[in-house]
Amino acid sequence: MAQLKTFTREEVAKHNTEKDCWIIIDGSVFDVTRFAPMHPGGGQLLIEFGGKDVTDEFYGLHKHEVITKYTPRLKIGSIVDEKSAIAEANASYISKVPYAESSYLMGLKSPYYNESHTRFLTSIRQTYESIKDESILFEDQGKAPSAEVYNLLGQEGILASQIGPGPWLKGLKLPGGVKPEEFNYFHELIAHQETARMGTPGYSDGISSGYSIGLPPVLYFGSPALKAKVVPEVLLGKKRICLAITEPYAGSDVARIRTTAKRTADGKHFIVNGVKKWITNGTACDYFTTAVVTEKGITMLFIERNENLETKAIKTSTSPAAGTAYITYENVKVPVENILGKEGQGFQVIMFNFNHERWYICGAMTGASRAVIEECFKWANQRKVFGKRLIDQPVIRNKLAGMISQLEAVDNWLENITYQMCSMSYDEQAIKLAGPIALLKYQCTRVAHNISDDACQIFGGRGITKTGMGRLVESFQRTYKFGAILGGSEEIMADLGIKMAMKQFPKHARL
Ligand code: HEM
Image (cartoon, rainbow, N blue to C red; front, side):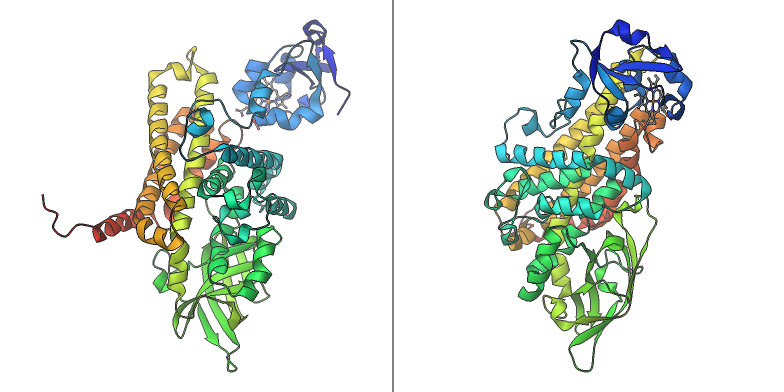
């Protein structure tokens, strides 16, 4: 970066030609002479603004991340005695925009969160900010998080934070210096919300959507030898793992899977044949926690990538950064020691983690929904139409009111359920919380649907444009449906919730 100086506004005003063009944004001075011909919005436009303060014009057309990205290349100094007010507000890790954060971060009291949660959240945001360039670029290019980033997320304990509290956290560094023994489901909730809040849904899925469901079966059902080999390298981001259950002919109806595993004559191996579809992270994974059918029934097997296992990208609505894969297993040889749990009891292994998966999808949906609300609030405040800000139109305020009140309602319900999880064993959670979590997931994705719809209307054309001001809103409206389908569809969730409630229905209750 060039030596940074200070200038008066009068000095900047003199640099107003095609050959010498400076502009002021938020108290900083940018030399855009060489950048102008490459400016995506047009070169002449920049020259016309040469020598002027273009803060309002700039923020009317670009997200703050544009100036962050170009500052090292274009900034030559600052205006004497002026501070960068907008940059400072954006650099803060906790937003001051109303409802942009959970209430405990906005100064209200909470029975659930304490100082360690704020520290934890700030640390994750800091790390995610440091990988922002890659996340936006790779989301666009359809590339899974790089090995360097994945290692970083492992070392920072961000991966370890997304599979629940447990003995595997012992000795690991966690975000914000949180000690493994103080880590609870509220920390984990934050980790999922923050991952979704990045605004790059495919890339975010590339970080943890396969891992968060692929590793738990190994943690809970793997042999000690398998765990010793696999768990540390996966937690530290050196290897990637995913969960391979669904097939072209079996989605929510797991019992219909057809991938077979036949024992070899010596009984020491299985030979696996079949296909899997929609396997998140599959294209980038080293390990595949796979549901197969043996002579004893559905069984979970831990399978390493090898030359007989092929992954192909499936083109979904989200970015290929998520690594959504079609997998073919052709005579894949797997040691019998790789069985997770007992042969023929794979269904129990699959069901064991379903509540946790559904709960964390609720975290992802509320995290992303909140980010969208923040974008809408900011946009409505700064965008002017018909001589007024959008927020000055009652119809826009009405939309914001609907979005906020729906999100606050589900987020508060999510906190209540998370609190229950903190005081129950995994088994007890499965009995008491399966129904409430199913209904919560159903409601979170319904709310996401409504928020996406209103956000698109508020952003207009930008809500359907992949780059620029509406980037987050566009990606949300294109991808929120994943949450309504994965981990049990909305319809199945609603039905399960009521069926579970009926199990508790008092025999003699009458109207
Ligand atoms: C340092 C100064 C600037 C930089 C680095 C910059 C960079 C960019 C970039 C990267 C885009 C692509 C869209 C996006 O990613 O948001 C863009 C679009 C645009 N820029 Fe700039 N820009 C600057 C200043 C300005 C100024 C002063 C104006 C005029 C008021 C302007 C007008 C536009 C317009 C009209 C678009 C197209 C917006 C759209 O498609 O909706 N830019 N600019």
